[in-house]
Length: 147
Image 1 (spheres, one colour):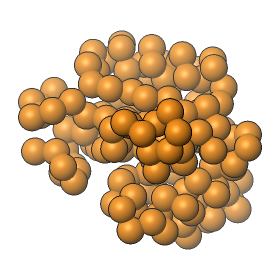
Image 2 (image 1 turned 90 degrees about the vertical axis):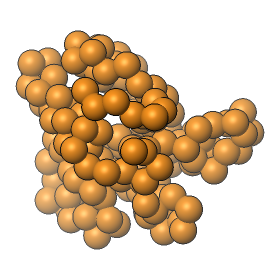
Image 3 (image 1 turned 135 degrees about the horizontal axis):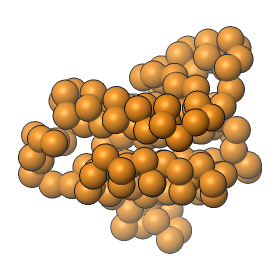
Image 4 (image 1 turned 60 degrees about the vertical axis):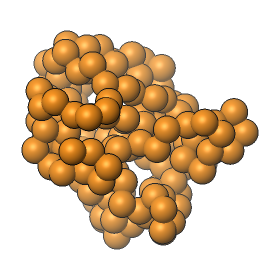
């Protein structure tokens, strides 16, 4: 893993506690030692991103992993808000969802998602996706604010 001046901050926006656990386990499995913060619904995600309420001291994420099917505020709406905000639109958003819908894929890219990944069922396949995310988005790509 490439040395960074500070920890990488990932915001995982996911309402399914099993998927949150699976994602954290996959990151641990590949020895990812940076920070993964979790928002469990769309409203909480926006509170985190806009530093409202209990999230006044939240750290700006370097990367967002977003599920589409969220309670309170849908992931599609969260994506639209993030990519239309001048301060947030530069944060890469990876849509990581179970939806294979052409409509969801199209809407996600129309709202400037940086990539769209369908969650696999098997842990081994999911682990490969997490490895790819870290290899590409953390180790290869230059993200704003990280050297």
